[in-house]
Length: 120
Image 1 (cartoon, rainbow, N blue to C red):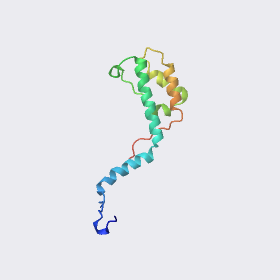
Image 2: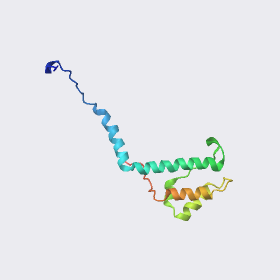
Image 3: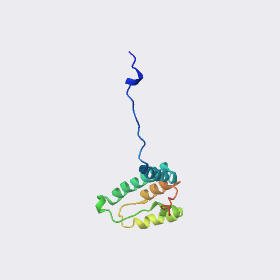
Image 4: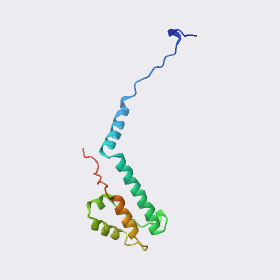
């Protein structure tokens, strides 16, 4: 039972609004500037740092002393400079921190420093 062309349903598509394009393009620039794999690796390292700090300080997140481990800052330093900077940051920690430092230095090998936001 074939239908006649005049009785078939038609589907019409409307063009999307042009105002949505700039947001999409900004997202595209972000993925071009920063490799997604590098971003994921950095995020994984930051999550690992967070978990290890909980173990080192043996407390809840709110109770961890104000401590900022800047991966980009570490990447600018030499190997021994990285180690001494981490020891300086972790001086309030009473537990042995050498395993944490070794683990972090191993994880950041091969990471590239992220540049700041684009200036217009």
